[in-house]
Length: 274
Image 1 (cartoon, helix red, strand yellow):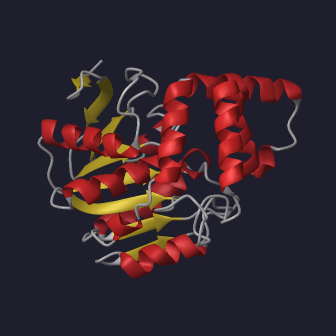
Image 2 (cartoon, one colour):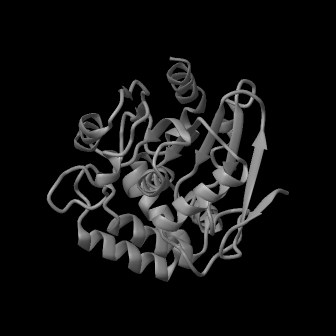
């Protein structure tokens, strides 16, 4: 299994396969390259695909330092530099998009060709605007309650957020199914990783970074998104290149890359070819 040893000694798992224009995939919190495998596989025939598990997730090493969005972006930069990449299309879902925003803020767009963001805001809090999480309805008190749940039982916390925010259709499931899903959620990342990155996501305002995006930008919006049009319009107004929006994905939620991998990939391919 290929690993890159980062500047602080943490090992991250990555794969580099295929030929053609380069795409790098950045997964979200409590996710991994395996959870979006069907989506990644849609591109392998025609593109060079680079995907990895962010520190603390799945096959990458569990970390007890540098667990914030700023350092996730530095990890991404190290991977890009290590593989000597140029003209990269960066695709980020949820926290993966936050990683890309922080990368742009720190390193610019010189290595990037295009950016694709899937259902993510540049600022998750809802203090003073409605572009934050849960369609602008999640309060700071809700966030503190999330942290309490994470420290109590990170598996249940991830399931709670999934069924109450990401996919409300899961709210009325059986106890047996819920128990199984808690175990799945528990396997994604450990308590420290989950709590640290959840905290970092909420405290990091990346709206200023959007003004530094100088490459074409595509936003993928599910039918039942986690973020409102206020966040989408912020991108539209601040990206310093062409902005594109795709939102014709019926019956999809924040988990759109698992729900409709083929349909989303086809829209992204049209963007890459334009």
